[in-house]
Length: 258
Image: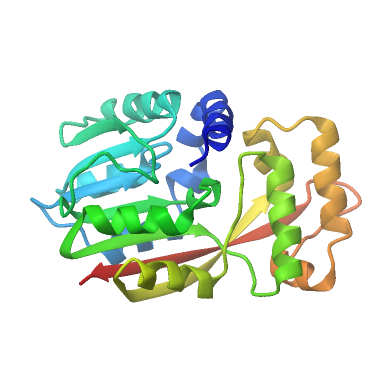
């Protein structure tokens, strides 16, 4: 991750750490449940959750009996996650500040490595997936959930611009073919690929990242003027009165190390 991208990510998420700890979208939801089901943590296993955010995936791994490392680039986010988890007991969770593209672990250390709703902030996602695979033992699993874009390059650019307007630390969301390529390029056999539609209201979504009124108005305008392929993907609804709604599509991909 480049120094500028690192600094921007730390600034954005350090400022809004508590919002992500308590965000219903991150704390609950179908993608979290399915990720845990797909990687199937067992008592006695070792798990690593990269870019843990509010610690929600780490909590679920630990609750299943896995000794878990929760890692994040942003110290304030890591502190917020630790306070949240330790309020309910976190004896089987260790907290480590780390860079997702340069994991501070020797190879073949973990049975499970996960990352949920974070890779769109990483400058080199291929390297990140290789790092996840490197620290996973042979036969272990790597599981990722992240934002998904369509295969149409113009629509993908529009959707990424929409995301970046709300959060300048957003870099790029990839399509399904690209994600499968990242996994296979890292020596992982893809076992599970699922896609999800997550409903959002513009007000809550923009407020979580501290957008001002002018930025929220620009986001609304992008929803109104979305080209047909983007509108089909995002399903924007902008009523004359009330909060606009739209969807973000996500991918769950799980691979096993050979």
